[in-house]
Image 1 (tube, rainbow, N blue to C red):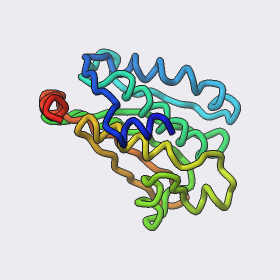
Image 2 (image 1 turned 90 degrees about the vertical axis):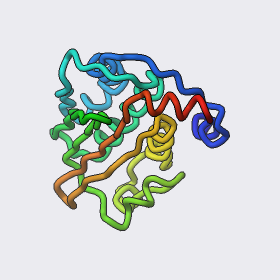
Image 3 (image 1 turned 180 degrees about the vertical axis):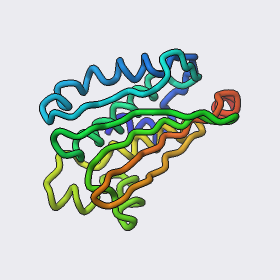
Image 4 (image 1 turned 45 degrees about the vertical axis):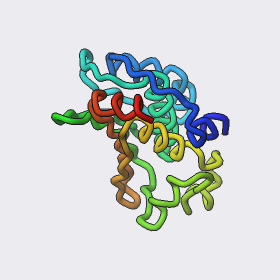
Length: 176
């Protein structure tokens, strides 16, 4: 709640630095290892080992933790969560793919709102209060990015965190 409050009030600072994306993801995954192990879920970081991008390091780690934690929560035991990325001239897209129940079209907007939980989470008593994706969305907006959801019922979901080149973001943050 404190993070969301800081984001809403505009007091969360944006500090862009150059990071090795795979290493940052690996560091974030350490905190989720026991959760994945308990469900026998294989979390596979498929990002190139030397790929660098300029991001707010703390926000990036929080985005990864929230998205991967959700992927683990909603995936069945013994399944896989894959993390990959792609780059365009103007942006990096970080993809977190799970093998969970998928997100219905009617729930896609709802799960991005504060305390918004999808029907599956409610009916299957999945832990959480519905703030993780809101925080992810707000942290991405802070960096000039956004989140996309690609999902198919009973097949899984891919959450895509899009980070623009930092020059545009740094200029926007400096004038805010």
